[in-house]
Amino acid sequence: MTPSAVLSVQDLTVGYRLGGQVRPVVHQVSFDVGPGQVLALVGESGSGKTTTGHAVLGLLPDNGAVLGGRIAFRGQDLTALSAKEWRQIRGGSLGLIPQDPTISLDPVRRVGRQVEDVLRLHTDLDDAARRDRVYELFELVGFTEVERRYRQYPHELSGGMRQRVLVAAAVAGDPDLIIADEPTSGLDATVQKQVLDLIDTLRVGSSTSIVLVTHDLGVAADRSDLIGVMRQGRIVELGATADVIADPQHPYTRRLLDSVPRKAVSARSVRTAPANPPVAIEVTGLSKVYGDVAAVDGISFSVPRGQTFAIVGESGSGKSTTARVLAGVTPGTSGRVDILGTDITALSRRAFRPLRRSIQVVYQNPYSSFDPRFDVFDVVEEPLRSFQAAPLPGSARRRRRENADRVAAALEAAALPPEFAARHPRELSGGQRQRVAIARALVVEPEIVLLDEPTSALDVSVAAQILELLQQLQADRGLTYVFISHDLAVVSAISDQVAVMRQGRIVEQGSTDQVFSSPREPYTVALLDAIAGHDLVAASIGRTGPLTLGAP
Image 1 (cartoon, rainbow, N blue to C red):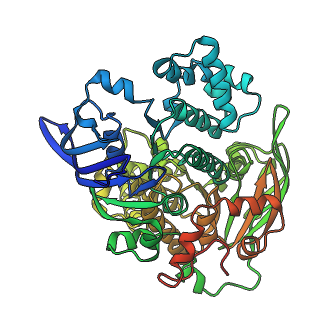
Image 2: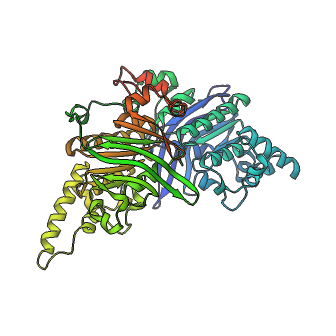
Image 3: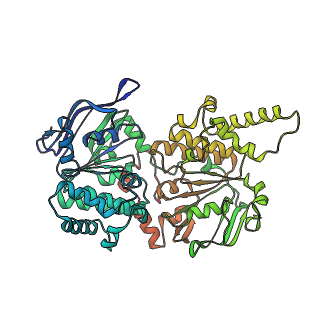
């Protein structure tokens, strides 16, 4: 233990009781965090990083327990605290910024009152003084109209605003240590930067120490002094951030760094493309109005066959609404949309149905679109059944054989073993579910695939595998992709052209290299500047090949 350490974790082992047995999931983890330091715990889902953070805060679930080791905060062993002692220290000297404000905030209470709860527990302030202090905290986290914000409910705030409320609650007790558990994982790049800047400003101003739990290596590279890389419940590498990024020692750390999105030399990039490919999608003056709000406002673009067209922007920019119009899920209010030479704006749902087979969608969270009663075979076969007419007498058996062959081919194309057909989606990892969603889209042999944030919920290494798969499928089948994302690093790795949307309008578009290397619009510049991990990219060049972020 370093004498000046605010937090010292030594040989920590944590387990969960499952089925009458205790299963260790964190094994002999050790690290120190000094005053004002930021330690990033990085790793994939299931690596033990969140469990470690929750153990420090005494927030393990009922079936979880510290099985061995020591957690010392300012020299005091936290593993020996009673429930009453934990209530005194947690929220005061120890703060938490949780991952999901939609779960962490009470939906039926005003947000100001929820921040006041911390002051009620850890200060002697009266009602008026507590309210004034909440106003000060809201100003500190960048709110204007603080009295109005105090009275609002969580649903009246954006995701970034809700996260600022959680930051205000975390710092209300003037803590010496904050555990930040994936504090920006669901936020757009610009909002993520604002929240991380805010946390950093508060840290510098009060010398608060921070344990930052994240799967985002870019965030870790930009925002931490130390990095602990976790895998299967163990820290496999620990050191100064600059040293770990520039010269990783463990093969797993190198693998994580190699998973950073890059312009790989793939079958797609070396395929000889026609000089003037036919157009797969032509959008002219498209608008979509809800009430008196224009979600999409007069946009135009074209997508050549066999290419990837990315639409980027923050939440509410109109990119997902555009995708729904292209998919025929919702009609445009005005303008024209041609899909494979057919104007879909004048088509009824019934008339659009034959075309729907040619344009399929892969969603951000495929699990919510799977029928929970279905196994993987049923999930992938479902589009076939939907588009096939009822079989003639005597042909049902042949139809089943044909469908089985096509499902098997789709699973193989999505790099899933044949035995996965008998599994249920709940038995699969996030990356495996996304492969099932891709197989489901491929099984009807579409020409166009709409990809709506297909990797945003995945760990960096799993996301890299999905991107590689998508590129290979495009090379093999000549697919046209429309890629919807707020992750510009991913977009720069996979797209040929990009359109930047803001408040329903396209503010800039062109070839990906052109837009990323020489952006014209200040908004595009702000999006690019908000990408976490510029130092990570620079350090990685030469070790794994040129990465993206506008590198030609």
